[in-house]
Amino acid sequence: MNFVFDTNRSSKHERIAISNLVLIKEKRFARSSASRRFCFQVLLFSSLFFFYVDCYQENTDEDFYTFEEANTRLIFAYVSKDTTCNTNRRITAFVPGRSRKKDIELCMSAVAAASCESWASTSIDATPATCKSIEFRY
Image 1 (spheres, helix red, strand yellow):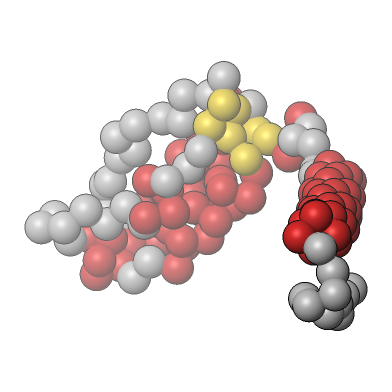
Image 2 (cartoon, rainbow, N blue to C red):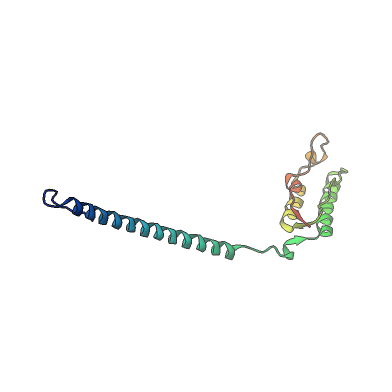
């Protein structure tokens, strides 16, 4: 909002009053703009939060093997690889708690995919990285 006034005809008090009105209008616009921006941010973050909560998948017991099941499967994978490659490697550590089924299955697949040369090697650790990074829960 632009005010044009003649400085020769208006008094000093009129000019101050008009400039104060302009400042008040600008402050109101700035406040309303900031409040609109704030409302938009609140709406955006709340919708993202509800979208995230809606997409979150619960970790059910069906997604995990028990201690016994996980370690039995890993021992079976090691024994079958030892039989195939005619070696005698042993599991050096057990999974101490419940573990995700997909982690155990990835480890079993990695053991089966390892070559007999690398499996029989004693100079390097032939344990696949997927087996070393199995997550577990108590």
